[in-house]
Image 1 (cartoon, rainbow, N blue to C red):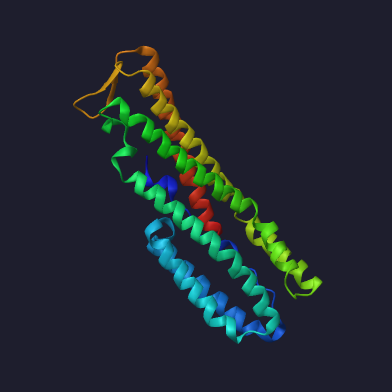
Image 2 (cartoon, rainbow, N blue to C red):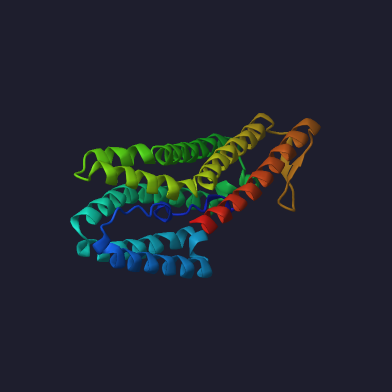
Length: 253
């Protein structure tokens, strides 16, 4: 399973959500210019497709925002504070998910040919289930972002018109990226399903396959071979779709 399947872009790219007073125009524009420059540099260096570098990117992005925050009017500061309250928990969940997947994809468990004993299969299935559950939790987090924004706004002292403006900005910003974002989450779900199906097939068919000298799964059962090849093809197709969705997300972020 390629590590590319699991490269998740930090959600901070999706939330340029700042209600601002006219007096804050220069400050906010300067901050956004610094963020755009950071994004351009990160794209050029490949940092947005490397899970080990997204955390450093997030820290730099947060520093830019935190430097600007105290200089803003109370109105603008309130809007930006809401964005930060939404941003950090989701970033933490994304980071934890990427760490789990990266640890798995770099381990022997990520290769079917490392299975030496039938007893090794159920723990691997359980591991995939944990990853799948983490992906589901992340999916639900994305789906609940707008409700979370509205709840935070309802608790704030921001005017009704500014609350409406904030949600409009949210819909515009997240609207650009929600398609590829949710596609990535759905493709992860499908990949975990195929991975689990392959492990269960190997378990049911124990004794009807072996790992040959070329480190390939070799079948003595035609039915098992056909089903396993079908699963491998599905994984290949979903992997390619995943890569395209990730590239689209990076370009829209």
